[in-house]
Image (tube, rainbow, N blue to C red; front, side, top):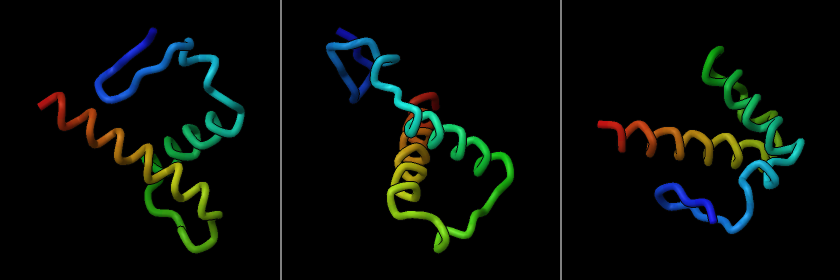
Length: 65
């Protein structure tokens, strides 16, 4: 069992990371480093992934304060 705040799984989190999810994490890092992107040119699924990562990052930062 692995748990952190609002997330829990009965499998090792590393086994849940796919090539696609790793690409989204990398795209998120590039976005945070370089700034704005043209959201209209991205697939909806990628925008959803980036917004989910942003939401989780903000939650983590709020918990630190």
